Image (tube, rainbow over all chains, first blue to last red; front, side, top):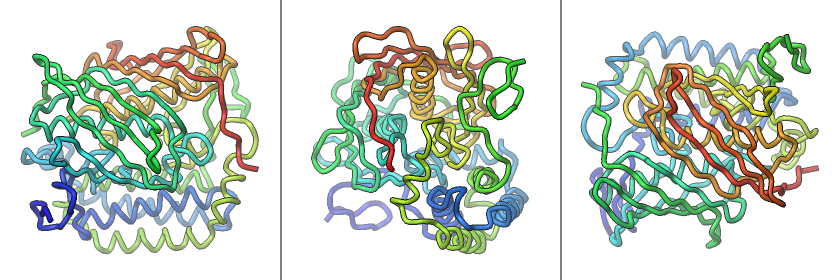
Length: 214
Length: 214
């Protein structure tokens, strides 16, 4: 069994996305995800006293904001090191918007992850928003380029929607680099549900990077 | 000055996205957005007592969950009526993942909205995640199809990234339907910052719908 750097046994590859710490800000963010989800499940017609809940959430935000450093300082801290990020909106354990998707690097050069999406990611009734699938695939193609040793930024991304992508079911997100031509990196990816292709992606990335704040 | 259905003066067109109610679940969701954002600003190195904050957030989620109806019942309620949705991940006032983007329908047939994105939507340092731009544009093209009277579901979507899209600055998101050919609906859209084109989108939608739960 392969072991990731943090010692977590993962079986099918090397974990390429940040490992949640189950404490500190990661625990608060995991709880914030539950709040986002339950608010959507409850809705405006629920008997929950929403004005009291709004007050409680605003008090928490005020409390956390008091301890937040200046943005410039935080930027340096959040981009420290050259490894995976902990704050991105797809895989980040510090970002409550991220489902989060966990991606593994496989021996064949591809990356893969399994994720179940709930109501916050809904587009059509009971199905994933097409733009959310685009978000996940853009990120997966980017991680696949890293895994292949040729990271870059998205230049062109084409998504094809083959069938609706279901909520509440395990989705397999895969991506791999196909070729490199000068500064252009070509990759493909897909989202499948129960073995059925839902969305495929084709991307050209460019071998370029924005500097990390120092 | 044009007035939207709810009486809000908007000046440059008809508001096509749900109007936040500033009370009820919308107020709780707005507060949840502040929590998401401040947690990212604070990070793991902050002096905030994150385990206490996690406990408080989990208690709120437990409280809200107690009042949530069964999913099937909630689905009927959230899809009631044929108007704009209040829960989608781009414009929904009931969805804390949504920035939210507010879109207006203009007399020339296009839709337009201005949004400022913060840390939850970050990809490269100080810039918007490419997949988040894809999410916003997919949704804007969909709303433009509605506005043009030919709604549909995304078939193919191509994004071109011209320059990085900045965080913390007003972004203009526009979209319009270009043509209809049988069941195929062709649309284009863009995100600009300070008049500079950051991302353009080209989409083919199909005139098909998944039934709303009843």
